[in-house]
Image 1 (cartoon, rainbow, N blue to C red):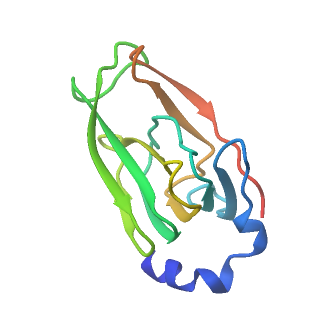
Image 2 (cartoon, rainbow, N blue to C red):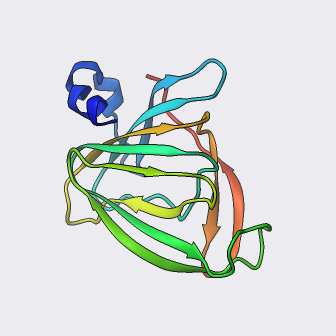
Length: 156
């Protein structure tokens, strides 16, 4: 991932830098034909965040531009086996500056919320996943529930 970040200026196209004023943008860079791997450029405008979510796979994130913020959550009761009665508590906060690389694994699922506070500038980050990242579990922390949602991306 560190090499990808360093070479990003050579392979990221203008279409990979597309943003969306309504929410962060996921711009596909590479989608493996067998669905075993996917690479995206995510563009975050100030104030844009993911919901609290997990991935169901391993992943590597690298920051090309700006300062990405990650807020972790942990299950109070250990492994999650149901979509209801989930008790999460806030974990640590990680600031990822340009050049930073972060990794995660699926067991236990890495639950977090990622984004850019309104006072910061735009962020461009690369996200590599060990599957076609077209869905994830979204958590409602207050209700103690999760649901599987489809995750759209823009073809590049």
